[in-house]
Image: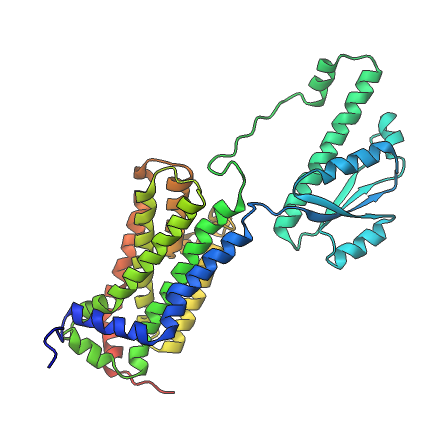
Length: 392
């Protein structure tokens, strides 16, 4: 008899679970490798912050020094790179359909003459909306250069008429706009997206592993043995089983925070404690949701399907890609059922904006409220663990 390790209680169950973790490579892949690969991949993908040198085709039918100067100024933008000078719009359209360019800048014939004579010529630009980010950035650059071209023509016309420069500028831009981007003044996509995508991937892995580690007990008919080690108490059994998972996922989550806020120096206005606390609460809240999933659908394949679907929906409904306030009211209410939503709001308030902790207390309480879910499904789950038989 091995007297060095108790056969019953939380410690014994935790030791049993550690052995199962070490014996199954799936745990290693999902709990360590998948989050690590995600961190390296997404941070490398968005290393520059914004996409640069997006390909654009120019159709210059004017062929004057003015139009060539306009083209050079457009090419000077960091997000835009003119890769093709074409002779007709049809050629440019074909290039866009082939995916060779994301935008078309069209300068009509006689542009310089009409601009100098005050006939208001039209500059046209087209973007491929299939590529949302690329199209948005190119639209901004081409619109900016078009506005600047109009101002340049207006300035030259005013000077030719003998008006002072100050009077001309007052007519061209009667209101001067002073813009300040708060929280993320660099407009860095990595700062905004990776701080939610990476915790979202971690949440998904927690869902899957929580469902898997409980569902596999049912599949392999070891659930009764597991419950007996907890002396029939589901709470102790779950606590012992998920404790190693909690430690590992918390360490992985803290390492993500270290990479994001330490190595990459992303904004962390309120310090480390609010975000580390939010990360820990995200881990245990996600585990609670995972327990609820396997309790509702106490078969391994259905539980994993539920976890996958719920985890993937999180990326769309929590509000970092499309604002929740713009969604249908029913979806706005549904977004509160995802732990990632509340972590995201804490990140916005604490890391980006540096608001007082008081304003985020509601989100911390939401994450704690998810811990109620296992108690709601406890009887159903225990019954499934005791009496359900796996049918291949």
